[in-house]
Length: 316
Image 1 (tube, helix red, strand yellow):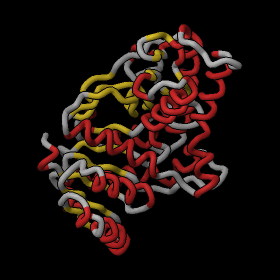
Image 2: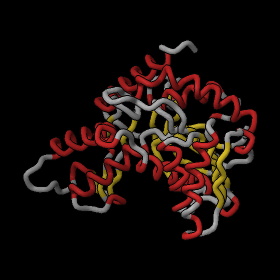
Image 3: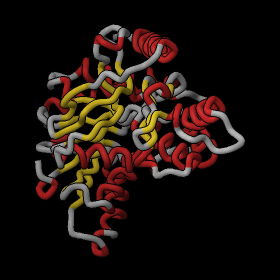
Image 4: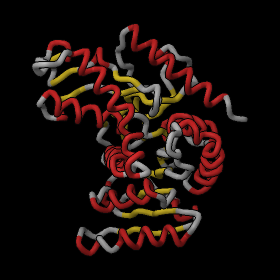
């Protein structure tokens, strides 16, 4: 799949959808973007505003639409529609409102773009990805969620600053729910090939203090941003662009995306949450099994239980 002929659809012209479309244009990750919204004027306003930047950048096309047919032949379709959590709500609090939106959206996408890769970004992303998989007739490797990609990026960047190393040399994953039950797999954390437990820790701190501080910072970061500006959109839009770029260029990068857990994780074969996978031009090329200790396995099982309860609370 070549980025020179690529087409990406974005469903939802709200804050996240518009920022994803804008980031795709600014970073020129594809040739054509279709920004879909049920309200055409909203899609037009966002698309036209973004289009005005194109004369100052490289040539590409952004098309506003309220017709699903315009998403046909998209390489990737990003789903951002749904009710956003209100102040004080968790991502799971929006589940009942957003579940039916995802079901109806997948029905339309199966009709007009059955071979496109579908990337779910709407929250709660893990349960909604599970609903999307269950609702769709396309192969399961063609559907996944943004998972804990942004959470992991946040952690690597902030931890790198604390340890005074480049973020590219921080190798650690946040897995599980993209939400309150997510956790850091510290047992497999490496800094430039050196186990975190062996890496020099800054004076005045202990490894345990750093682990606690940065796990908490990562878990609360989205809420802290939303409390101050009402939503999050910039970080997730870039995370989505990275996933799209990996797909279009068949780069086979590893990201912790929302997928159905491999049986090796010991949490059954139904729960969907953030786990490391090789992402390529076929979507999910392969799921990887991340080593974890007994405490981390317990946290994974608790996260799975939380998400299973949320999914089973719906009238499926």
